[in-house]
Image 1 (cartoon, rainbow, N blue to C red):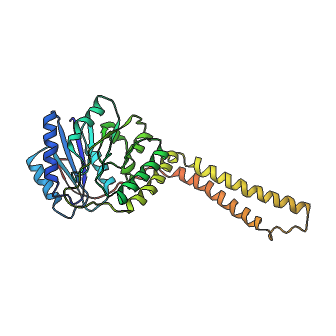
Image 2: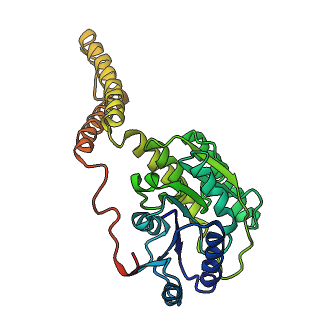
Image 3: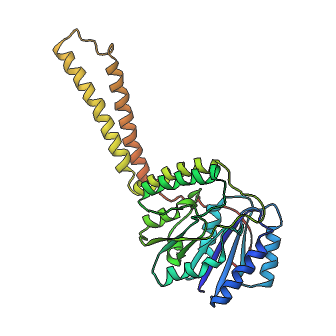
Length: 313
């Protein structure tokens, strides 16, 4: 299998036939042995019926249907598990990503040796106030934290070597940070390609303003897990020791003053209570580090979701 296309979707019945035909045309022209994996993330329209019809007409089409909406990360993760292609490409199902970009993305993976290539929608058709500006802030923050200098981390159009998607796990809302997850799993050659962003032809966007708030919270989470997930004691232990030593230092100062001046009242001093709180917090942080060391980084239930039906997968 040369190519797997993983396409998560939610209520995109109108765009699916056109998208599948376009992908088929490109792959036939390039001579790819390919598969299209549609992951229906709990659609309430006739998307699954359309996927079933497409499967009947083209055996390269495969489908996975969730029992309910679990989110894009879960859909991508399940699609990655099923993918068999040497190169794996993800794209959105709303026709805003152009399948004509596929040959160049495949070439960058195969011939130029990239582990991952992320699309950059340099010219966008989104609302500048509600999408473009928050997106720029989000991407700038992610660049600073991760050290990966991509313009558009959240672009749905990406290409991967097969070994990349088999080595990573995408959960929660972490699909925005797949390049960061890949880098922290040892895949260093990450590239970028300017891609066409098309105006939405059918339906409406499935993402609201809350995705930006969640995005920054997820960035903090993935940064912590990436740096300290396998050594949480280095974080909790360091800060616990630091806080405890400050409390201990204040306590030592108060005790010395008491020894020098017996009339010195410890409990009447605000510093006494500050020292007490700092010592308790320091011990708690230190104990949290020990407990975290005993907790497995990857919960086996983190990507548990019900799959109602499969087609060719």
